[in-house]
Image 1 (tube, rainbow, N blue to C red):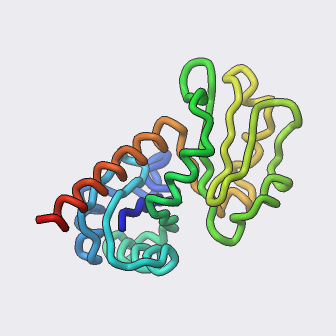
Image 2: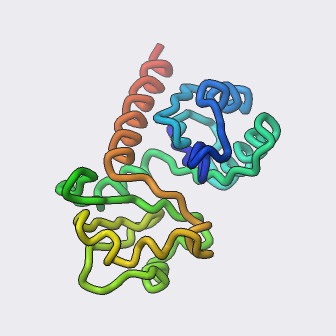
Length: 189
């Protein structure tokens, strides 16, 4: 099965620096195959026989701790879960000069529609929706600071999620689809 590991808080503002080539080696050493990293913010696509997201998260967190001496939290989602998030993500949302659109991936302890009630958002500014595993948020660039979403950073709720913009999320999904095709080719051989 194809998965993505989303690491929280690495290579941000000079903190928790992790080299992607070494991280790929860590994943391979932990038994993952078809490992691909995408940009420096901790997005790793891989294949594994392990079927539990929770089991994979714990295994990868331990491997990262051993190799980098950093207690990094890891969200793992399989390709079906990411595909469902992509179906919910409006096609017209973008992350560009006009619009800021993000996917807030949720740890299981807050992965419920009730999380929307806890967001510090001002009503009527931007669009927000829940889909299993994520909160989808979009706002015009001119209203980013007015939306209230900036108050989320540093909150206790924020510690239970990791954020990727929609462009990154879409690219992760494409890479997962490519890895799935590669995995199918390997099993057919």
